[in-house]
Structures are given as structure tokens and as C-alpha cells.
Image 1 (cartoon, rainbow, N blue to C red):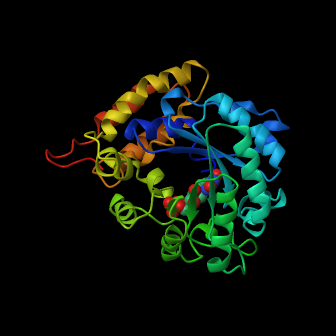
Image 2 (image 1 turned 60 degrees about the vertical axis):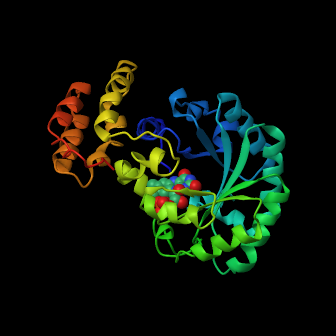
Image 3 (image 1 turned 180 degrees about the vertical axis):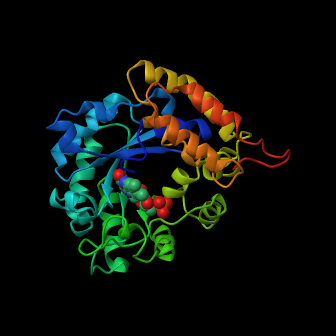
Length: 320
Ligand SMILES: Cc1cc2nc3c(=O)[nH]c(=O)nc-3n(C[C@H](O)[C@H](O)[C@H](O)COP(=O)(O)O)c2cc1C
């Protein structure tokens, strides 16, 4: 998610959950290939498994960007066919690509030929006046034939005119049934659903109903403890849970290293604000972190002090 799932956010989320696949913000192929902005590929090895999401629509340029991503060690290359922003549309990538499944298939084939890691697509169910019942199966058939065996479907349309990107994440109605039907039509394809899922119970329900995966965006960001701390156990079946307290403690050396390298505290702590959401002390935690982030010279000791002010969970209650 642009501006949200940067490497600091992903490092934190990995501390909270070992198994979940993490995605980068969308990185545009032109920025990497023509702009040489290779710093956009920076990540910490602890983040694995981590997927690089690319934006673009020129098969050769996407292939070159994917090669850079694979060389950098990303575990998956994901093509964005879901972003509705004007800037992205004018570059003819993102959700507007739902209108040109043949071009998307060419992009997938080029990506497939360029890298050995998995090539996946994130899409909408359609855009504007398209009939999702007709276009989504066609879209999936084309990308599948081109070598994409895993897709993440944001279960709502994008309206390319008239709605802001934010409105496009809430206003077009969700159609989970359509995504379920796609699993019936394409049983060999790994299909994940995305959009409006904000509890692990809901995610479990989709998996139990036959879907292969669930992508959670905003809820995981705003309320990481609820979504991530018990996912290893409740979704992946491992004997492992973690707590936000553990994650904060593990972030302290990471923060120290970032500050020593010339980084700013706020760049990390802004992703930690929601760690205690819903718990006593959440508000003072957010306030302390926001104040510390704005202060020059503030470091991990302020984060540790803010953690010390969080009342412990009652015994028997699981974080998250
Ligand atoms: C701030 C923000 C930035 C986003 N950036 C991206 C992006 O770069 N690539 C992408 O595929 N989706 C992006 N999205 C959309 C989310 O991935 C997701 O599809 C959408 O929020 C619906 O899922 P959710 O209800 O679980 O959040 C973004 C969403 C938000 C809130």
C-alpha cells in the first residue's frame, strides 16, 4: 500500500507474524528502469517472504523491472491491475488494465520469461461500465494462459472517473460471491480475495469456503495486533503467537540502527501507532510516539518508555 507498507512497516509486520506474505508498495517499472530509482527495492532480509508489486504496462520495461526485483531477492513479482489513481491511469497502468486483458497477458508472459520467482496479478472485478461476470473470467483465463497461476482479486469494481482512490476502496460494492465463483471456474488457479476483510475469523471463513488466500490491507495496518499476532497460529496452524509488546522490544535495535544510519524516528514509529489499538493505554501510546517522532534527538528510549506505560494484558487474554 502506497506510503504505508514501506520497509519499516513490513519489518514490524514480520515481527508480528512469521508466515504472512508481505507486499511492497507499488513501485513503477519506469521509476526503476528509466529513473534508476533502485533504492525503491531496498528491504531487510528479515522481511521474507516478501513480494514486489510493480506498476506498468510495457512488457519489456516490466520484464526489466522484474529482473531487478528478482536480483534483489524478492520472492514474488506482482503486477498491479487495481490502482485507480489518475496518475496511474495516465501511465496506462493499474485498474485501467482491466480493459485490456490481452495487454496484461503480454505483460505476464514477459514477466514470466524474465524471472524464476512466482508472477502474480492483483486486480479488480472490473472497471466502470464493464460487466464483471463477463470480464473477470476472460481476464483470469488470459492471465492464466500467460503463466500467472496466482491472483488476488479486490472484490469490487474501480470507477476510473468520478471517484477518488480512497472512495474507490469503499464505495463500489463488494462482490465476494463472484470471487468464490471464479474459484469454481478456475479450480487450478490460486485465488485470494481482498477488500473489506477486517478479522481473522472472516479470513478463515473464506479459506474454509475454498478460497486459497486472503489479502488484508487496511485492517492489518490500523490494527496489526488483531490481524497479525495470532495469524501464525489461527491461519497457518503453527504453535506460535506473538504480542505487540514483544514486537516493540524487538523494534528497539532496529530503530537504533536506523537512527545511526541517519534516519528519522518518525519514519518507523508512524507505523507503530496502531499496535495497542483497542487496549487501555492505546491513546497515550499514540500520543507519546507522535510526540517522540516530532522531537529532534528522540530515540528508542522514548519508545521503550511509552511501552512501559502500557498496562499489561490480564492473564489469559491473548494479544490480538
Ligand atoms: C493508503 C493505501 C495505499 C494503497 N496502495 C496500494 C498499492 O500500492 N497497490 C495495491 O495493489 N493496492 C493498494 N491499495 C489497496 C489495498 O491493497 C487494498 O486492495 C484495499 O485497501 C482493499 O483492501 P482492504 O479493505 O483490506 O484494505 C492501497 C490502499 C490504501 C489504503
